Length: 520
Ligand code: HEM
Image 1 (tube, rainbow, N blue to C red):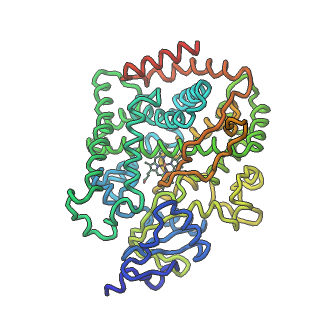
Image 2 (image 1 turned 90 degrees about the vertical axis):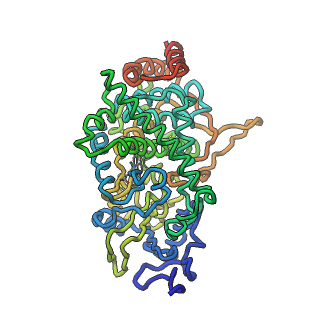
Image 3 (image 1 turned 90 degrees about the horizontal axis):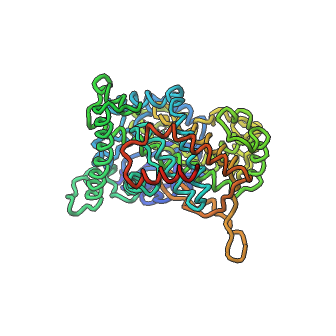
């Protein structure tokens, strides 16, 4: 019986050879798993399986299988694999990691109220204002574009959810939040914690011998303080009758009707913040990286923007309709460097059969987006950044390939678990892509001898949501009039900002006042 542990059961999709007890655990990649999964997919096929002890993992690198299993059969594939560290930190109330529980359903229902296409249109003014500040920040300190993008991303979701913006990267709300979130996501990386989910007895290791347990406790404490504190701030503002239309106000008003107690409300607000932050900023950072590395694509986008918008005004979302090349750059960036190369793992609630393979209940399913987006059977020269592919076919696939499964929502996941922030994210991406291309030239940095220092488009962090490792580039305004238009728009944005500039620290207040005085 012991020798059977780890062996691949009959009927499972094929996969790398297993060894007794471990199965494939000893070869499970701990860094950049999407590269190894892609190598295995080319060898074993669009559906392959791994054994981690007794547990089964199925990796899909096949669009038709993704569509069928995760979209059409979502009622049985919308679970998540167990995540003990998630339970330790947030009592199973982390919506993104949570199993298919009543608590997850409640949070999912609540998120619909802010994140449907209609609801997200109400958030456009703050997104536009923050995107204008991003231009303003880059204009004045182009070298800190990387962190300014992170600030943009966090400030939008802070305002939407908690009614409070974060005007500077240096403020504790940004740096503290990002530090703890990264410490937390590091704990989720394969290999950072003993395999407690596969070998549950390991959960019994006493805390004094388990650094990871102490780390969970520390992170829980810090996250609770921040997330629950934000809810308290909203409650306090509501008591003072200073409503500003934030989502948490709505949740607090409808807590009983939604069935959300204070615990769930606190975690919900925090987890949506986490889901929104690194993902949106990672996409925009990848876009900048791709533009620096591909001057020819940038030039074509500049020509299109000059034709549609011109140099005397900033672009608006409506302009995007007339900008197929900019839209193609946006799609190609998703394909070239997907934010979440393996999405988030799903799990099966019941056995499923697909093309003769048996997928047992409790199987973890990964969608290998990286492998699909870099599949030469689907895309010509998949390793190259070629926006034109999205002009030739709607989903960028090569002639003769049915690319319908690769619709724009593909990068946002599947079925009942599809990213609830998709529309908010798409607005952020569209606004910033147009703004940044309209305003600036993005070029490689130069060394002291005047030689170009090429960027490395493979230098990425290894995490569930990957991001380019901070890089240098030269960002300069495109025309003599750009600066004046940005300063003016930044002053006008004060209106949209004002209702979210609540509870700012004295330093933040001073920063806001100074930057506006300077723009005048
Ligand atoms: C470029 C930006 C973004 C990308 C690429 C992205 C991608 C994803 C993906 C792939 C998933 C997993 C879906 C699945 O399991 O099939 C996900 C889940 C999630 N996302 Fe996003 N996301 C982005 C932005 C956002 C934003 C702006 C928010 C919040 C406003 C958000 C909140 C969440 C949450 C809460 C989940 C968990 C959903 C669940 O498990 O039910 N995301 N996202």
